[in-house]
Image 1: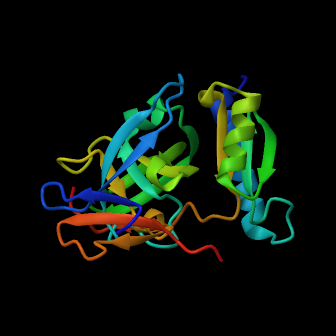
Image 2: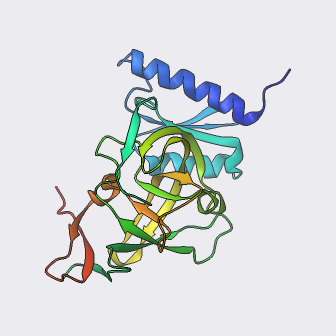
Image 3: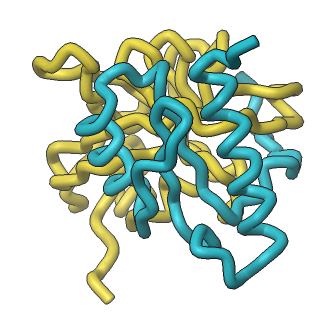
Length: 83
Length: 136
């Protein structure tokens, strides 16, 4: 079975996140990474640059994803305010 | 007096942002509660908005994030282009998409966003303002 584009993007993002967090010498460590259609298309120092590059390569945001490679996405973030 | 200043709304500090629309055009104006108690410096997001706004503005999926406190559970994070014209602020910002936002507002500007600026009442007890940080 062929994985959907979002699933392929997500799987690649998870691999990059794990690698960057495990290995500080990874080329992705400390970088912002843009993925489109299952491929890395941007490795940058800012979200702005990733966004610009992704929108050039793939105008459909549903076929893109991005990740802060060294971020801890498993952490629980507290929002104190009451909506 | 700060470069950008807004009157309190429903007695709360509010700021106005403009979200770039995926289809182009003038963008969506959104009023956010300025809340230093929302999140921390280490968070992977800066704003909390209605998820429909994130999608309407062509938000690029980032990852899910787990929240506790006022919001509980896993929520999607999107990369959204945000402007504050009075400050010439124009950047791509990670935004949590939720199904309900604080009453009387369109979302929350979290501490991690506010800390990009000088923020406060700047001597006006009925206002809230932002100024650029000094270049360093």
